[in-house]
Amino acid sequence: MLDSTLQATLDGVLARNPGEPEFHQAVREVFDSLAVVQERHPEYHDMAILTRLCEPERQIIFRVPWVDDRGNVQVNRGFRVEFNSALGPYKGGLRFRESVNLGIIKFLGFEQIFKNSLTGLPIGGGKGGSDFDPAGKSDGEVMRFCQSFMTELHRHIGEHTDVPAGDIGVGAREIGYLFGQYKRLTNRYEAGVLTGKGLDWGGSLVRKEATGYGATIFAQEMLGARGTSVEGRRTVVSGSGNVAIYAIEKVQQLGGIAITASDSSGYVIDEDGIDLELLKQIKEVERGRISEYAERRGGRSRFVSDGSVWNVPGDVALPCATQNELHERDAKKLVENGVIAVSEGANMPCTPTAVEIFRDAGVAFGPGKAANAGGVATSALEMQQNASRDAWTFDYTEERLTDIMRQIHTNCLETAEEFGRPGDYVLGANVAGFRKVADAMMAFGVI
Ligand code: NDP
Ligand code: 2IT
Image (cartoon, rainbow, N blue to C red; front, side, top):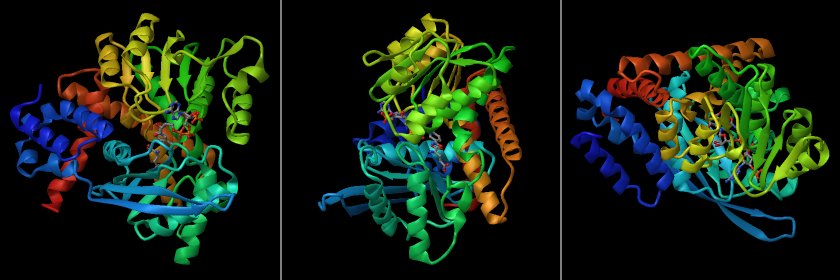
């Protein structure tokens, strides 16, 4: 229950942002956690910290015209929401997918503020994207779209201002086209303006792997706190993109067995454990569909086109596809099947009711803003390397990532304990992420 001042603030935020259910969902969750902070820190309310935090510093919406392979003019909509720069330049990915709208970008940007704060690195929160979907487009079409997108975006970003990266639908190919156009328009080799770059032109080792590795490391830490580990554990994974692939890789490195992967057409289950080289070949190289995995793998693997991947029994669940992909019934099924840990590789993949079910059942639950922070943290390490014109080794960079994930885990756990909710990683992540941003905003005065 929120007290009346907090409730009034929340009502105000919801009312001034109509028709944005995902943004409302993300804001509500944070407010629920912050009730305990508000009691101890009335000064935050006096300075309208929450009201200001929920209002993006800047929102840019722009037309993205481009010409398809048949010579037809296409028009998409571009977004960049520069949410909060109290801790550093706005930082966060770009999502290219048909379903993208302002509310989705705002929920992602809002979550990014707290996630970036939790990394302990100097990055603010932002997010962007477009309702353009690279799936089914030729390389030439993707290139022309990216060039048009950057022709507007370049005026708003910069290594000290706003540093985009990838998200759904944006990988190394898209970042390459975007960086090329930025370089051409500005006549500057400003490597730190984008992260997730190719290794030959300013990218960081481990960035590609970082989000997925980090989500599994977070699961390992949560299990460690309960005296067990990922080793030997059956792990159910959704998605088969950047995050899912490297979450599976880390599960395998830690001795676990990842038995599923999915995309928007269905899921595959492989009782012998996912063959990662085959999955990478189909998804990263050929940009194919997940059903091809079962066709080529054979053995004890099969493709399921109807039904939920969460019906597959497992000890650990790693949702790595998209928001609200794991519902109440899925959570019930997972609990019934004995799941002990859930670590969110995706942003907000579990619905609020699903999260409640995990909490009531005593399942270790790692919320996305903590569990998937390894990606943006390694983006910040890429920025460090760019600023010092250096390139670190894989091992050194991975060691830094692992340390950061462990620190986030400890911070969440200790903060939850401090506020009388031991083991509540949602509360721990929201409060720990919030405090640092709020204190910086207090220091800056009303801006
Ligand atoms: P990719 O585009 O590489 O992969 C996305 C995967 O999720 C694909 O398998 C895709 O299937 C599936 N998917 C996407 N939307 C849906 C949907 N509506 N229903 C079913 N399946 C869907 O993206 P990422 O792996 O980079 O991102 C996955 C999640 O992780 C997102 O929530 C993102 O915000 C989050 N994240 C990503 C980070 C990163 O560094 N990349 C960092 C932190 C979080 P299909 O091929 O059919 O579209
Ligand atoms: O949601 C996320 O944290 C990302 N998509 C990564 C952001 C980044 O700047 O690396």
